[in-house]
Image 1 (cartoon, rainbow, N blue to C red):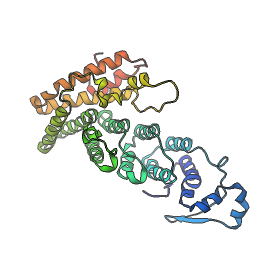
Image 2: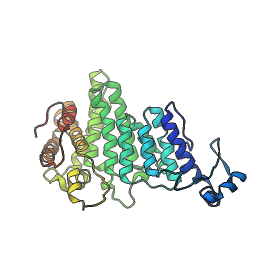
Image 3: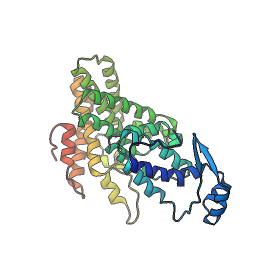
Image 4: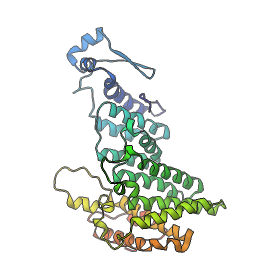
Length: 352
């Protein structure tokens, strides 16, 4: 990860990132004594006469006096502005530098900030920028330990498939990215200390249902194009068996009580939260419908490919459909647009 932002044609973003670099990131490279001088308005004249200059990755920077109360915007507010200003792939390539800079400056981001980063990158078609940051977690701080973060990343990856109507190139790309996410989830930097292996996110029923959708979709487009799929089907069979084992003894359970679903379910979060300030960690309703619809479609595609061998997942499909129906029917928030989300993925209107 570079310590210095790369300018693009986006003047608005360049200006915001320059402000972040000068007032938040570069001061973090100074020894404490010099940093105090920079942030002390009374030392402004002294600083002009005795300039502090540093060089970071070829960038030479001369510090001006910085008034913490006048010259520095709230770090979370300016982060939101920076994200909102990023549009192209080149703009989003600066995400790693931004996150690494915040980490260097000791600014801790909360789950809602990480969720916002993933949402804004995904909505602009740049979820790859987030995956790249996760590959360098020790520098960027972007770890895949929050269920919402991981499910949203996989949802945006799978969007490449559904939004392109199973375009061959887009679907193959989605498969590569989903494989990268699964690989990252199994690395120690993306593990919560002391967490049992079975509770890790690569063993989440929701996550593995989403990656089943990706794998089955990739086989579908390859087979339609007349490409060999023998090895892919071996991996699909493994995925089916793994998912079936994860669901063992759970298909008759109330899915609201299973942690895999409870941590993502917005209705439960809303009902459980005391009045006052809370940091949302669940998905919103539309995203919850999307994740479960991908699970359902994944099982359907697997059945199309390997026939009876996927029948072991029939009870899972039924449990998901029942849970989704109950979720929609009991939702206290607006369900507008949820039908379209479901239909775009599954290919037929929902029965709820």
